[in-house]
Image 1 (cartoon, rainbow, N blue to C red):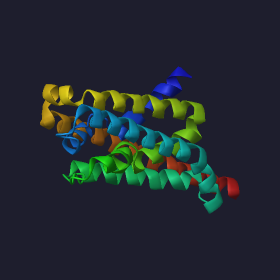
Image 2: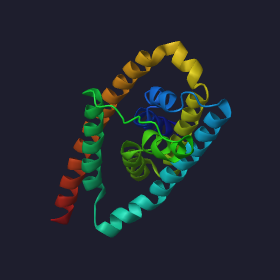
Image 3: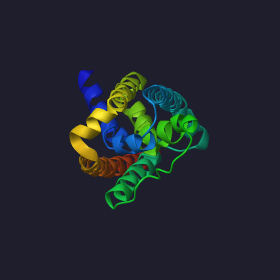
Image 4: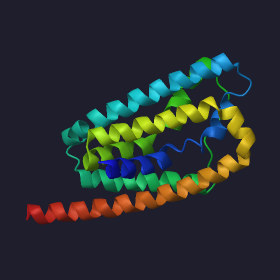
Length: 199
């Protein structure tokens, strides 16, 4: 059980990339009062939590309704993870245009910064592999880490610097790209296995 939680936690940690999005969060909330920052953090975490939990419990039903097998989803999900990772590694940055503080919590911080396609894809695949309990713990534990990182964002930025945060993000996205390749491989094997069973 503990081993499953660790195996679910680590890829989710890379997918959420709390340290990688630290620089983006700091830029979006620069100049805001501490109370405003705290409100944005709590609202964005609430948004991310609701979105992730809803997808964990309803995502599989949606796939079944559409007639999509888990192998199909693993191939598509792995390809998405790989493409998202490569886009970041090749220098494509997230849009960080200034918006009103009241609009920051839900979009872009809650989603897609904290919970985006990579997280939702991983959550659904981990749900199938480890069950909803382990997946839920992995997601919630990582969201707690995000909250702590955001609460101490000013201190962390001074400690590692904006360039250090970006460099760390590159390493995490490289690992996430490898995880995406692994998911595509497992998805192909699952589809082949289902084809043999159907024969």
